[in-house]
Image 1 (cartoon, rainbow, N blue to C red):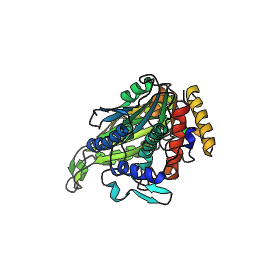
Image 2 (image 1 turned 135 degrees about the vertical axis):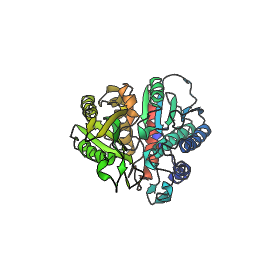
Image 3 (image 1 turned 90 degrees about the vertical axis):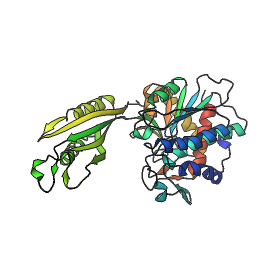
Image 4 (image 1 turned 60 degrees about the horizontal axis):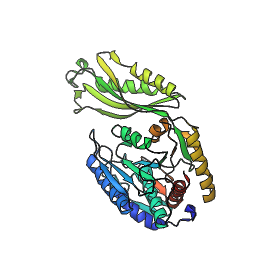
Length: 377
C-alpha cells in the first residue's frame, strides 16, 4: 500500500488534537508543560510506543521519549524531534480559544508546534493500523524549552539525534508550504543597567535612571541591524514605583545571522557595548546560542529530494530554503545529521492571538510524514 493513500479523518483528528491545544503549556510554567507531556505520553503509549519520562532541570518541565516497536529496535533510525512548550501564557485560551471556522482552526500553540507534533503521531498510528512497517525504527522526542532557546535539553536532543540516521522536525511549514533545509545562527543576551535611585519628585536630579539608560541602549542595539545580522530587544523588566528613579533594568536581546562569521561579529559588537556612562553601568551577559545549520548538506538535500517527490504525488510543489527563526533543527543540522525541518502544518499567526492552522494540512502533512517514514532507509 502506498502510504500516501492512507485515509485521515480531519474532523476526528481535530477532536483528538483539541486536548493538546486546550492544555496551555508556556515554557516558564514547568507544571503546565508537564501536564502537556502527560497528555502526549498517554497518546504515545496508546499508539504502542515504549515511553520514557525524562525529568526536567534548570526550572523547566520534563521531556518525553517514545520508541516504537521494530525488528531493528535500538539501531539507528529516524528521530522525530518536537517541542510542546509555547509562548502563550496561561489564560490565552480566553482570548484565543480552540475554534474552527471553515478550513481554519485557531488555538494557542496549534501552529507552533503542537499541530505538527500531533500529525507525526497520527502518521505513525496510521501506518501501524495499515500493517505497514517502516524500514527504520522511529523515535519521538518532545522537549519543554525550545521557545527560550533550548537551554535545558540541547544535550538531550543531540544525544538522541546521534543515535539516529535522520531527523524530522515538524515545525510549522513555511508560508508557501515549503520545508526548511538550513537555519541561521541565533544568540541571546541578558542586558542589565544599574543606576542610582532617588525620589522622582523630591530629588529627581540626584538619581540616575536605569530605565532611561536602557531605552537609549535599546535604540543603539537595534540600530546595529544590517542585512547580514539583525538585533532586537523583546523583553524588558524594571521599576516598582513610579515615584522612584529606577536603579536597575533588565532586558533580553536576540541577534540572528546567516553565517557563523556574521554571528560572531554580532556577538562581539554586543559585548563591546558594556561599560559605564553618566553614572549608569551597562552589563551584557551572553545567553544560549543556536549554531548555524548550513544549507545544501548532501544528506539533508537527499531527504528534501525525497520529500519533493512525495509532495509531487500529493499534488503540490515543495520548496526548500534556509530560514531564520531558530529551531532544534539548528543543533541536529549543525551536527551534520540529515535533517528536514518545517514539515509540520500550514498556518499563520504563530506567536500571536491569531495563531491558526489550515485544517486540510493535517491530512496533507500526516501523509507526507508517513511517506518519509516508509521511504527513508
